Image (tube, rainbow, N blue to C red):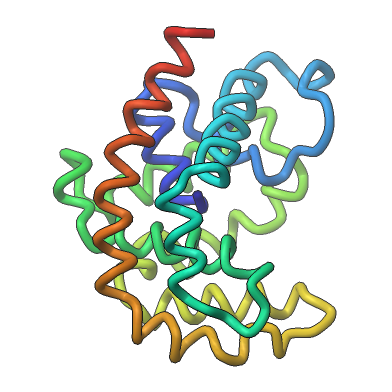
Length: 192
């Protein structure tokens, strides 16, 4: 899952949203992290592991039939954030702009935010990434940003066309998958 879903699942499980967001910016053992980050980073990792192994997620990745299938999980993560943003009112009582502003402000003021996350937070807030995910244009812009981090950005050359072709099927997979993921994230906290 991508940033928005991790933040939503943190809210859903009543765990620290910033520490869940930080999961993509922390490598290695969590034992050296401040206690305020440990639970969220651990939940983030469990969510990612569940997602990557889930048959619906794999099916969505295969549905795209990308020239480079290794980037399919990245693309689906972003598309699932698009689906969540697009249907936000079904998942949260706040509007997406309200939730986003709260997440950005809390993360910017969190005492233990990892440096790599701290470096992107001003742009995340300035350009309101989460709210931009509602529109396909925002997701394609995010994918373009991701592509620049690859040695071969042309890996993403066929993504926009494939995404537009398979958008409705992937959205259907999202609804089924995300319901399971919400249950899984709650079980992580009660089971372990």
